[in-house]
Length: 78
Image 1 (cartoon, helix red, strand yellow):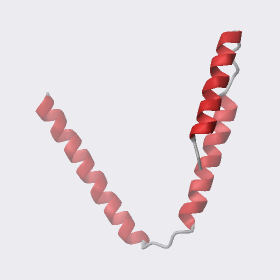
Image 2 (image 1 turned 120 degrees about the horizontal axis):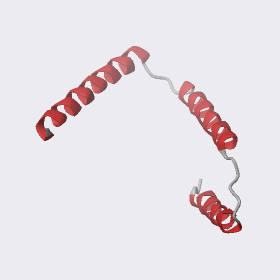
Image 3 (image 1 turned 45 degrees about the vertical axis):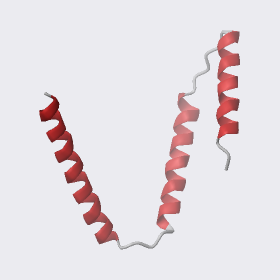
Image 4 (image 1 turned 60 degrees about the vertical axis):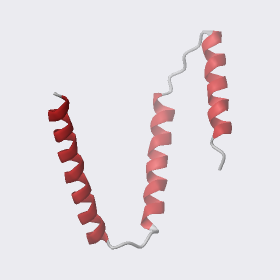
């Protein structure tokens, strides 16, 4: 799916609204779009067959290493 067409259309619409002096409230449409994306991501993820325990273990290890590397880098830069 080509994402550039809606992106460019949104940029053009935002520019035209800015030039017209209008500032629409986009909080509700943005929230709805994000919730829909999260929902469909969950549906797509649910279709994949993986070993949940293995994935949990790998995720925990990755998180621990990420935190450790961040703390180490913070100490080195400090």
